[in-house]
Amino acid sequence: MDTKTFDARPLLRALVIAGLASCLPAHAETEVQKLNATVEKLLQRMEQLEAANKRLQSEVEQLSAEKAAAADASKQASPASAAEPGAPAGEAHASAQTAAAADGAPQPSKLEQALEGVSVGASVAMVSQRALEGTTQGNKSQLNYRADVEVEIPLAKVADVGESKLFFHIRAGQGEGLLFAYPTLTATPNSTAFFMQNSDDSATLVGQAWYQFSHPLAAGASGAQPSLEATIGKIDLFGFFDQNAIADSETDAFLNNVFVHNPLLDSGGAIGGDSYGFQPGVIGSYASDAADKNHWKASIGVFASGAGASFSSSFNQPFVIGQLGYSGEGLHARPGNYRLYAWTNGSFAPYNNEAASPTDRTSGIGLSLDQEVADGLTFFTRYGHAFDGEVRFDNAFTLGAQLTGARWGRENDRVGVAFGWLNTSSGFRAAAPTLDVDGDGVADIGYSPTGAEKDFELYYAWQLNPNLQLSPNLQWIGQPGGDPNAKDIWAIGLRAVAGF
Image (cartoon, rainbow, N blue to C red):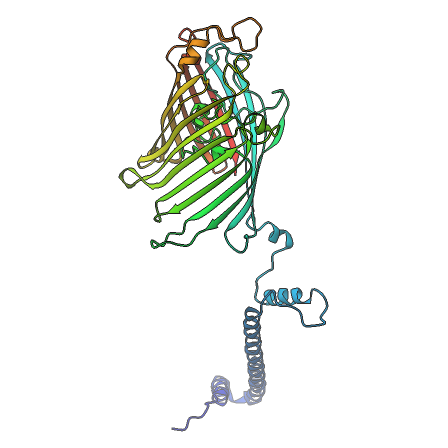
């Protein structure tokens, strides 16, 4: 059936005129003629507007088609394509920017390109402590601060394989914290204290500066892809050995260094690091991902010790440590971390170094583990044993737990508690009453150690917002230094940490 376009304008004109005529008296015929002329002009104006609308619609459709074609062309064009021969320098780059702009994708600036992948972390910790029991050196109340800035910079792949990066750690601080007249075996109630020669002077140094390269190996039958990793530079070795999920940071968990690292290695002096705990070294690791949830890692590290830790000597009699670690499903299929390690150090400074020899050798084994046992509840333990060397204590055992605040509606809060036991060595018990290290004719220690030093700490971490945490703290040190006649030490504190 043949169809034709129906034009309603004549009918509309007729209806309007008929309606007006029926409403007007006979003597108003001239007025009807005038209205008829007006209606005719209005209808002509409508025709003109309709024609203009069609033209605009056609132009919009054409522009849309051109924009779509330009977008397709920009996606197909390579941003790194070279300019035509003889074209002015920079024309290819300008062309790529133009194409990207047409597609609505802004090009990053040179600064943004240079900083791509760089990660920066910074924190400031301030600690106020007061001694409740125990004789202190100086005021019973002390205040100190420490600031840390860490920067990780990804580098180009080596031979188009693996990943490499640079890492820098800058530390500043002021104040030495609480010091007690009764010497402890190793317990430091405030591990955040940081200063150089004088605690009244603010200190800043580059704590770490190292390079790391990771090389993936061929995937095995299980589909897992193991990798080799090498790290070299000035390093905090506790970032690679003796780690622990809930007892590894004095600014985030326990303040007493007995619970931060293995006491034999850290303040016990077995690592032989510089005055601030850093030292040059090299680490090699092999990581094997046996499954998505279970990972094994074997590492060995060789570090300059003693005078070499402060770059005053080479790797003569270095500190060597090897570790085997597992991370994945543990007790009742809950996440856990298990690390077993052994060490030896030929540049160890013994407690009687001036009376006997400048350096000594010490060797030992250690264990660090953490295991979630229930929702929000994680236990940790560390153990260390020294086989040889003139050490003040030869066995160290710590045990503790952390509970998140989800059970009382504060899921980002935490409460932690820990207990430590440091057993004095037989050699130290025998030498302590008469030991004169500085040769001034007066016994330096002057008491007979017996048994073990005990340490206890309780803290609550109140997370005010993602960047600010307040943490009250209570500590107790029983039989400090292994001295049965020494008074117990009690201290309270408040730690504030701001960072990102």
